[in-house]
Image (tube, rainbow, N blue to C red; front, side):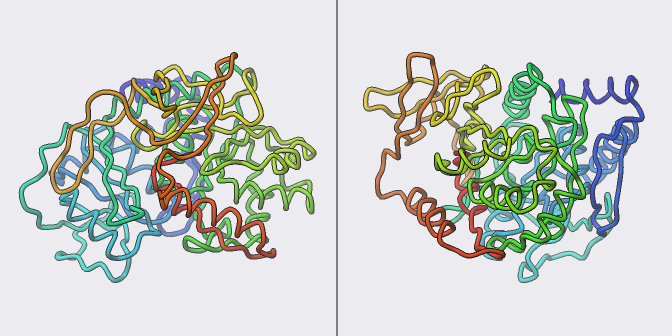
Length: 417
C-alpha cells in the first residue's frame, strides 16, 4: 500500500485541515479526523500494533472510524489482517479465527464466541484480546484475508496481497479522477466486505476527499436482514453524500426515498451498484431522479472490482469495461477469465497458492466497443445464483417501510455484481 501512504503523507502536509474521515468511533461518539490528524493516528497505532507482536489480527465489529484506523495501521505496519463480518454467525466467526490462526482479536465478536484471554488493552477505543494459536499458516507477508460465507459449507478465506489491494484501489481512483470527483462518500455496506473496504476507504483517501463512516445502526441497517427506511433517510439528509456503493436492493430503497423525499438524494452524484443484476426499470427510476448509477462486476479473488461503467464509458445492461489493473478474456465456453491483480490463494487451514487466470464461473460476452456483459452462471446449481435471485425477487414483493435485506450474505460470497 505504498502509494496510499505516500498520498496520505502528502495530503497531511498540503491539505492538513481537509477532513479525511468523519463518523462514529467505537464508543458511538462523533469523531472527525483531518488528513494531518489521520496520518498521525495511523503511525502511532502502527507502533502500538507492532508492540503486540501480532501476526494475524482479526478485526471485528460494526462500521466505525476506529475500525478504519486499525485497518490502515495494520497495513502501514505490514501486519496481516482478517476482517470478521459482524453478520457472520458465531460458528462462522469461530471458523475464521481458527482457520486464519488469529492471534489478536481487535473489536467485538458475536457474544457466543468465547475468547481465551481477557482484553489487555484498547486501541482506537477497541478492545484487544490475545488468542492462543497453533503453528501459523505459511502465508505471504502482510496479507488481507477476506472470508466469503460459503453457500455449501464453512466460510472460505481469499488471501490478497497488499500489492493487489493497492492495484485495484489505484485503478479505481484513477478512473474516478477523470471526471468530477465526489467530495463526500458515505459508507453504507459493511466495511468487512472487501468492496466497501476498498471503495469506501482506500479510494476516497487516495483522492484526498472525505469518507463518512456512521455505524450501520445509524443508517437503519439492522443485523444482516432488516432496513429502517426512516433512519436511512435521516442519514442521507444528515450526511448529504455525493457517492454511494450499493446492492440493487439498497438502490431500490434509496430510489424509493428519493421519490418520496427528493431532498434525501439531492447531492448524490455517483452511485456504483453490484451484487446482482440491476433491473432496467430500476435504472430508469434512478434516471428520473437524476441519479447517475453505474453497474460494475467483480469478485473477491480479483480484489473486488474487475469492470465498471463510468461517466465517460457507460453502456446500460453491461457491467462496464475492464479496469486497467487486470485483463479479462473469455474461455472457449464463454467463461469470464481474469488475470493481473488477483488473489494469492485460498486459506483453508493450509494455504493453497493460486497461479494463472481466475476462472470466475460466470458466462459473459463483449460487445464491439469492449463492454462486458454477464449472461449467467456456468454452474446452474450454484446456490450463490439461486440465493441472489430469490433475494432480489423477494425484495421486490416486500412492503415498505421495512424490507428484509439479506444481501450482505450475497456480497460476501465473492461476487460484486
